[in-house]
Image (cartoon, rainbow over all chains, first blue to last red; front, side, top):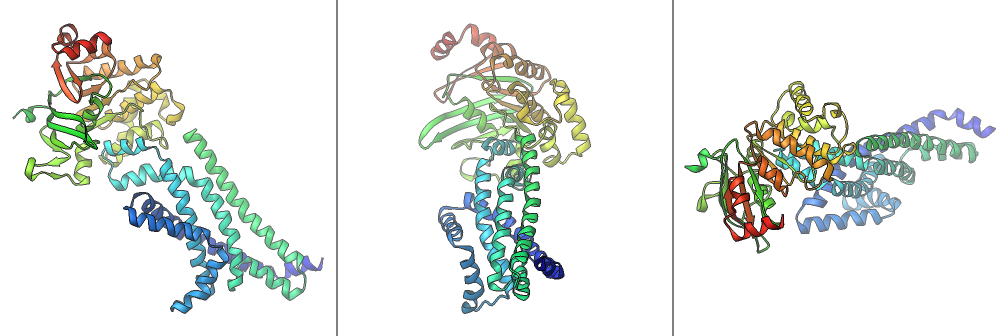
Length: 218
Length: 255
């Protein structure tokens, strides 16, 4: 019981941590969704050499354990003259990592857009901008939404690793409370509960998009 | 200047795919307000020629004029330059197309498909475009499907939506690329009768088809193609009763 009390008494620490986690994930998505789309377009449309090197880069990023990527950005970059404070280093590594995964998701969704709906757009005089904005991207969004949802849940989980580079997110908060009150179970369980809550919200969004897809694409 | 009077004028169009000649030096004038059916065996270049008319296929040589205006390339021979993407898009707004496999936009409703280009390309007010779109849909018997998504429709319904989408552009010319080839036999009739109605209204229509009876009924002119060349251009009566070329005779005995 003392554990629960400890959690309740440090609720502001947890809230601060959870808010920071949300902020990191939201910031990451705000950056990595447009970047992922851009990268996916480059991966499908750019000339050979550029496309191949981008594909290599994406593969490389997806193979690196996230914690090592965060280490490289936080501890490694200062050696090259770029020193970021923990929060920004965390956001940068999270964004880099998520962008690589999203690019692959978007690339697959771009390929799934029916060729003939693009050809019809050309035939009806849609400009390149309209083609993407009105025909391609809406279809991509509908097809990719469930996979994006899964990726967001992964990103939330990965963000926990950022405590190692001292970002004060939710896991960091739980660790802090646990160490200060000598009660390991309740604080970590509380953090797990908050992570689950975030994931449930995302899952609900995914289910909603699945319904949209069912209605539109059958 | 024939190309000024003609709705569509094709001059010396050649097309090869990796050295394989699909169209050889095609010349063709199509009079405004007429219906032209392009017939011929599979692989004779019918669809390729149709797709050259709105530059979905780029001819290797030659030029195409729509009501006297060039499409795809500007200028002749030595001084020709490709149209900018934007110019080409604008030129295409006067030529609508109906595809063999419908090519509807799956994420948009039936009405959404019909008003998409009028609203976003022609910049007509949405309310006006939707009113006109609904009127067109009820003409083809699909008024109650306005809010449905394409995947819920039958092939015949999809193709009637595709025709409505073409009409909503108020085009000078409509191109039909084998509009009934992907349909179940019992749905062919509903699509052909819609096209037949349009033919009476003075639209310029070019139809690639394998439906001989339909071509005979609806066409003002039959264009017979074989081996990438136009072998015969004739009124349907003459073509079907007294074809001039050996190839057309053989084609007609097989159909």
